[in-house]
Structure formats: C-alpha cells, structure tokens
Image (cartoon, rainbow, N blue to C red):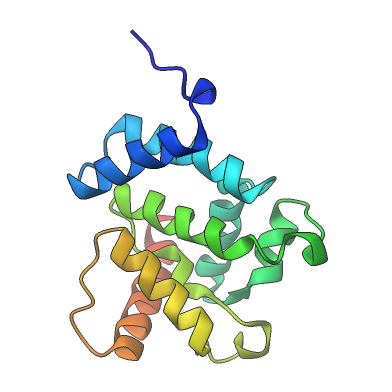
Length: 161
C-alpha cells in the first residue's frame, strides 16, 4: 500500500526523514520521496530539479555560482526567497549524496566570492552541516574538505554530465 506523504503533517515527515537518516537509509525511495515533500513545504517554491540542473551546468563550465543564481533557477524573487535558500541547498546536498554523487552544493558560494570559490563563515558552516547530515565524514581540515569536494564536483560534472 502506497503512503500518501502529502497527507502527513510536517512533523510526521520530519520523523520519517530523521529515522531514515539515523538508520543510514538515505537511498531508500521513501526517504527520497519524503525529503522532497518536506523540502517543498519548508522552502516554498524552490524547484530541486531546476537547482540541480543549474548547479550541474555551472559545474560543467568549471564555474562557481551564488545563492541568487539558485533562486533565479526556480524563477524566484531573491528578496523573498533568500532566507529559505540555505534549507533548500541542504536538501539538495542530502538528495545528491543519496545518489552517490559528489556534494554538488560545494560550488554554491557568496556572490562576492564566485571568482575564488572561497566560502564565507556562514556559507562554510551551512555546507559542512549539510554534508554531515548527508552522512559524509569531514576527514580533513574543513576548508581543505570544501576544496576537495569542489574539485570533485567540477571533475564529475565535466566527466559525467
């Protein structure tokens, strides 16, 4: 019998997600579907598919992108969506990790840092928290981990996409 995730409360969806993450079952279809429904409720109109497509396009070109680029990909006005973009990118990070892709959100940085790809303090914290939530082990110094993941994203995008 199929589960009607739309009929579940936000709290029930959060419980399903938390249980799957605790049990390290983030590749299960129920986790992916639940995460998607929860993502839509919590982040509004962001479109995960469009975000992923946009990040992959930038990755193929070997370019970093900024948070506003993510909002633009979903056709959202930046001033109304900027507070929700972090949560959306967390969901993208967890989703792509469940597909055994690199953490593609590693190439999303502050607008004033797209030339270097360096992450600001909040950007770095958000990315590392999402990486940990996705089950990744930060096995080296944090900035080195980010740089390594950024290289993986660019290499993978150019090779696979």
